[in-house]
Length: 85
Image 1: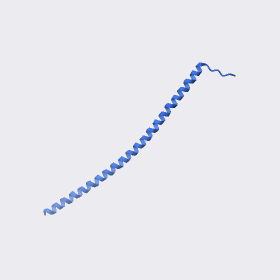
Image 2: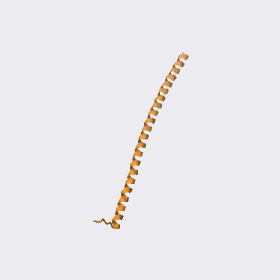
Image 3: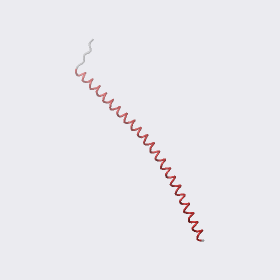
Image 4: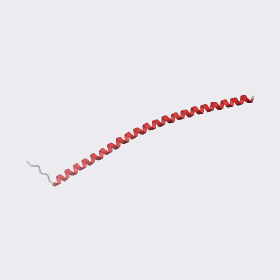
């Protein structure tokens, strides 16, 4: 028994194989892009968290400094009142 292929069947097989390879290449690119975006998102989240921590540290420092300045101002007012008496 001899297997014979018509030109039509060979062209059809070539088209099907070509489409399968094209889909696979496109799918691989999509998967790579997806994982790259996921990694980038993770990095950005870590950077955001680090920046949030730095912002909180700076705000805390500013609040402490503001509190110290208010105490100093209050002390100066008390000294000025004591000096007038």
